Length: 121
Image 1 (cartoon, rainbow, N blue to C red):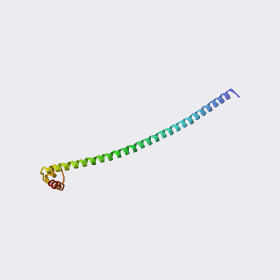
Image 2 (tube, rainbow, N blue to C red):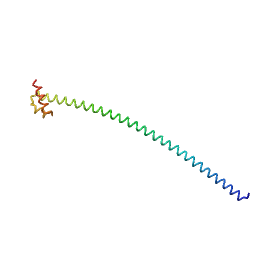
Image 3 (tube, one colour):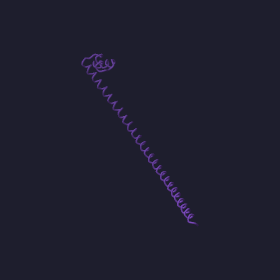
Image 4 (tube, rainbow, N blue to C red):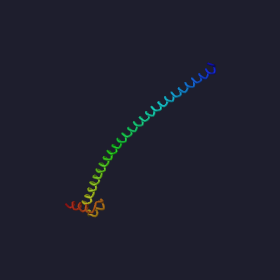
């Protein structure tokens, strides 16, 4: 074997070794990328599950607060109605006629007439 042939053979071996190394590194990088992509997918899925759980918890909390607010509004309305009736009775006791009771307190004329009759008894 001549020197030129030996140089060609050595160059071919080096070239083949470089190509094999390049292919191996490429395969390794693809494997790494695939694992990282799977990790990212797992993390995103976990975050979505957490957010969904938080959303459900917040929705339940808001529903509970809405129920409490409705109950409070009902109680305030009842208290306001009671206060309105007390004011109407007070106006009736001072001698106000049904029309005056109706306009002063905001009751209907029928309600004012009933209270006016009640005052008489």
